[in-house]
Image (cartoon, rainbow, N blue to C red; front, side, top):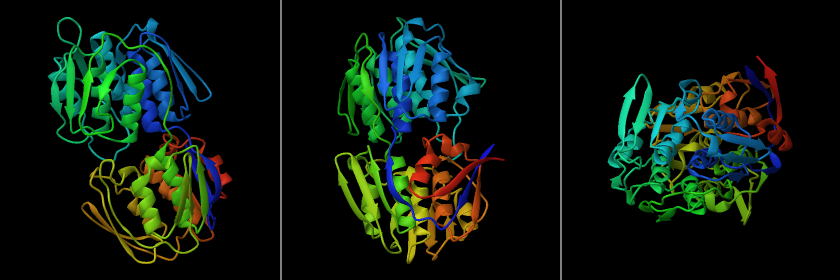
Length: 421
């Protein structure tokens, strides 16, 4: 198992090119299943989760190939509608193949998903919507077995999500694109990755209105066709590298990204004392003093994203004062707190609320990554630590969401080495 060995006392500064968004690439890859003709997807990040989903899709008999950041897919040879536990258990987003398989082929058998242990994240909203569209759903032996109604096509319906769910919204709009009739969805997720998926579906021939709002209408079509499309920039990777500047009195320029994707985070960075400048496809964060404390409350988009909570907490640990963080999305997303405390942080947690009293510096220590985003907060904290070496264990989490992470960090001045345990 790989580990990161990081020498502290780094100033994080320089330029870094942002990859395509993992959370957009995965549903876009799943959406390829809907197309009768070949699809080409550009700006696909080289990540473990992407490799897993490509392997899962190819296991269905689909011809899917990758060359650099480009993936091509031809579904003509599909001969299976089955997604096995061995692959799905490692990545929650695998459940996103359920909607496309059910909509296009009338049946699917997909293992219940795994992924980061940051909360329950049930898939009941996906299944309720499919049942409302006429599907027969059975959950047996850890598998979801779905069957379209007689005639083989889902039927458009009116459905309101009980809670805002990104994966649920994505799965259902993919299924609705090929349903018979019109589907009206309320309380949809509005994240940029959902918008990216809807835009690609439109490029494939889908009829969707209300994109980017809480209420979407999908008029089902008989067939969808392949297209050429590029994955949106990763807003969380962007925010993570910018956060490193705030933790080390640094200066980071992120390229191939968009400030429109990260507005609530950039506002917090400014409130902490950073100078933020941006253009159409770049963002720069610069700070020359200890950051100021802020209060953070995670919310569905367009609120502050839960995927940036751990990184902002790490900055707050070094702020000149006390910050309050309230996690409203996942009930178990403070697992990084004990690890940050090992580095010298002063954090008290009471339920969904964390009180962070800033300290002047982190101290080097061995720590363990607990989930994807927490792993990046620990890497940045270790780089910002006073002189000494920190060993970060279980970095397979970070490999799931950050492409070429150690080389990008080295380019920003971090003294980091990947080693074998």
